[in-house]
Length: 266
Image: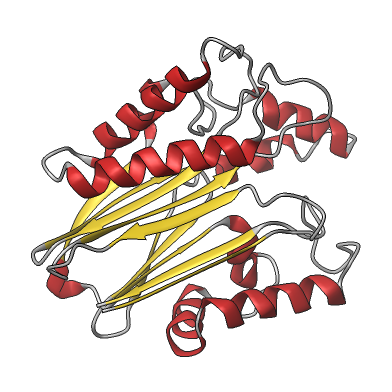
């Protein structure tokens, strides 16, 4: 089995808000992977004395431990418990009811000799490649479906504010913050292990390779990760960002973003 994980900040002077880690039991027959993309808060207060990297580390560590050790527990339940544990760590010092309390997108993958389980919440991307090379993207596309509804607004600030108002509300999109009920909104599923050749999990900063810069489709991205590795793919994203520093050719929310990619090859 091959497992490679790479994470890089969007800028050297800014802390990386992504998290990625995996657990591989000594038997080699099972494992779990967790990838989080912390949501950058807007300027000003957000009700919490902790920064986003603190939150993603707390949530990611709890989620990985639960996913790896409690194999009887569905992944949505693992996420629910991890959010509850993380909230308890700072409920006494922070306003967890604040709309922008620290939060993150989530991918969890867990496997054994029989099945591969997945959970995806918000706009990180999971690619599942079959033995024949067919690639299936596992997406929580609610945010993407909402973007066209705000394009008629006059300014970027108005569009951003409207999208923000749709975060963690009914009919909107969802990220893991302090409410454990959000776990029930995640996209989950199970695939027979024999049908999976590789898994690739990417935050949106790494998935730009395909959906922003058009360096290839999801199949090409999965192939690039398997053949050249996550580090090379992120290098290619950074080169594309540098070639279009102001987003003129490839509009995007941030010129550079934290980028994390993980590959599991069975």
